[in-house]
Length: 614
Image 1 (tube, one colour):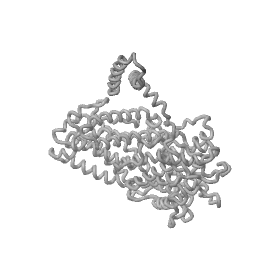
Image 2 (image 1 turned 90 degrees about the horizontal axis):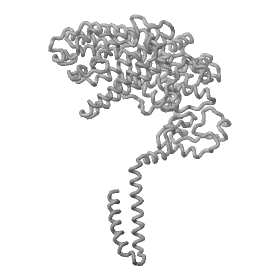
Image 3 (image 1 turned 60 degrees about the vertical axis):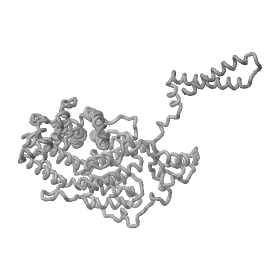
Image 4 (image 1 turned 30 degrees about the horizontal axis):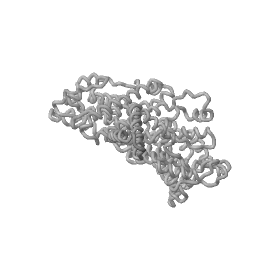
């Protein structure tokens, strides 16, 4: 623009000189050309000044663009069998719009045709126009020749299956609401009736056996029975075989089966297999679009609303499952939070939810059956952000680490505090209640409390600077948070609170991913206390807490084999800490000159901050 203005000034000088010389002469065509050029330059200059004086005109230009924020991030499209699968991305949107343009605009789009509807309900169209990768003969219709069918599988006697089903819904259901009990029980009744032509849905048997596998871990065990056994393994194998018999299909029963197999594997301390199953469950849920806010069409509005709520429960169940197992193993998580926009489900019992979906305008239930699970899901989102931020900082340049670490820690710590403030009283004070609601919420209260402590440790640990990662240098130790505690002190407080809660784990947390995570964090808490000890031998209060931790792990090894090894590690560390010479302090968190960094009185005067009112 500056060069244009300079050109304009030169043209003005030339113009004035020419006009003064030929003002009395005949009309010259060159003057017309010069005047036209001058007018054009004046217009450009005027436009430039207008833009400088009115910068909001850029915003007006942006507002004039089409607003696509309300457009869906993806679509549910029908596969070759009429099942709806999720497809997203700009390139696929082009294909979808093209296919939609081929259909009759007066009829229901074949892409969104509801499975099970008659041709008369769909319109006059009798064919489904699908995308290329969902056409006939693709993997959606794959049938493995050696796969077993439900008819080839033997079912347990009814008295056994009744016991296992009731155990599952009494102890697992509202802590892991991946099933909708009324639907499951209706299908279970059909399975027992064995009426020709009125059997359960094809996907039900694999879910049934997965439920039996999980519930088998709740059966009483003899005192001499090893903790490394695998109760329910026969049911587990049958569920797995039936799942692979339906390879290539996309059903919500497959998501449920994979998730329950993951829960069962975690209860056996086969965490690697559990993590793999959890990842498959997340992928299967994404295949159905459960991670989005897209509604699945149904034959009537109540069923559509119910499908939406059940889908939300399924998604947040597999989300939390994947988060806990990934945190246990320090492995990548299967779902990125940026890709998920699924809302949390309504806080209702299954029975009340069914009534609500039939009449949303009716009176709402005051039940809070899912309060603990919803609080846990919210905390899982914060915990995954903490893990993600830590990994990002590990890959950052050293010059940027401290500044980013400080700002991110403050932001995430604020989210943890806000979560704790918003924790419903029915969950927070469940230990004080002896009624059914108290029992219902106490399990999730324990789990969320331990996850909260683990999140504090994961968040504050990177702020410590020595080679062991737990003892702070003097400068960092003086950087206290709003509560007056340094990062190391916050880690210690979280660890000791976790140990003080552990006595409830054995009786309230069923063998599952919840139990695996709780025992893992309990062992970490004991190790952390020893490695941050300000003296050798450790203070009496520290030794007492570690001994308590060892005792709890000894009790838990009867139901989860990994606790035995964790107990052995802690016993060896405690023995070495109490017998170590002065020069051996480095084994437990830092050099000898750093002993006074953490005030010994902090350990002696520690009072656990319990959100559980024990």
